[in-house]
Image (tube, rainbow, N blue to C red; front, top):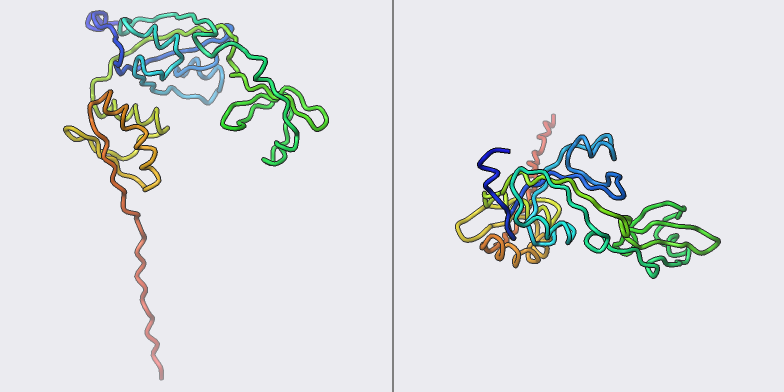
Length: 231
């Protein structure tokens, strides 16, 4: 950590790059640091993570603690279930007819994790024509700890825009930074998703998003007729 970094502290709405490892009951469940991530998945690679402090991009307890932190200093942050992934709730353990799964071409087995109604579900048991499914977050009720370093503040507007697009859309579309706006180009079906981002871009970057439908790239084939020489 440099002397310049030590003098910097964070504030709400700062864009920051973080390096972190998350532990649930002292077992790693997530990390963007290659060495730690490979303890979960041997093929995992280091990945860049940029968030905006105070905007709910991480669990609430962690989000609150990121303000007034020094750049470059490592922190260890312990969170209660309420501050992280919530308490386990008995009402989220439900019995579902087996036919519902068959209707989605799924053969449920105990221990299986799958997505149902846009929620991550763990199959607890399969008995006859009934399936017991747990809709609690897999990390609910667990003690959560993060080892985290805020490596730097992001000051470049283009990099900020890329991080917001990635958070809201899962990817960064083609865009052009302008003085008071951001021009986004893409297929027509992207416009609706972009419109959902407009308020946050105005709030955090003070820039309006302008969507422009990209022209479809069509391959042009030249058809040449062969001349037949008739004798």
